[in-house]
Length: 159
Image 1 (tube, rainbow, N blue to C red):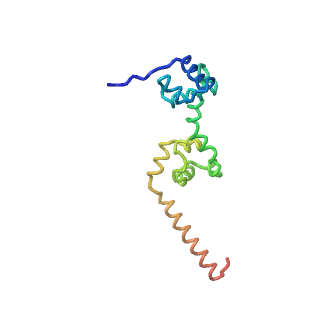
Image 2: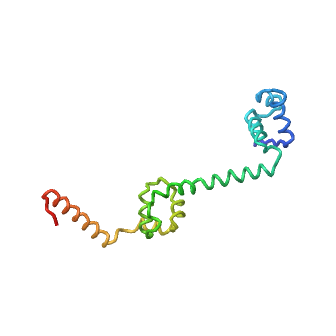
Image 3: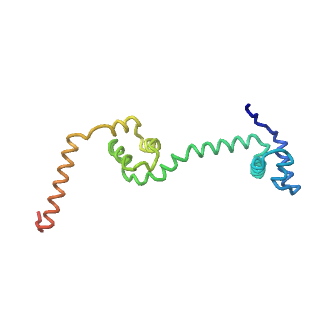
């Protein structure tokens, strides 16, 4: 059997809060006398102190503000840390994808995609694509150059 949730009018809630605030009853005592949960009465009291109890317009606005703040949290987090990208915003798409890959899951992928202005499908396509022959050759050549520089440093050969 499903238990039906009780609904209380704003007037009832305000009167219950006044029992606590004006008559000095503890929340537990007032809740027991009224037949409501103490945690619920405590929440009503906080809502009343914020000036939101009984004013449905203010309450709706406060709820909307909380929803928007929650929705904005990942974007704001990414925006604060995008500075770590340095000049990546001016670079090509492949550089942006590589930078995102290097973040190691520190930030939500969706937020990075929006902030860098690249597509989700392009990013995941790039991740699954094998390295090009040119890129492999460049990487090998860079390794040889590094080795030659180290050798020349040890032999003190210049030029």
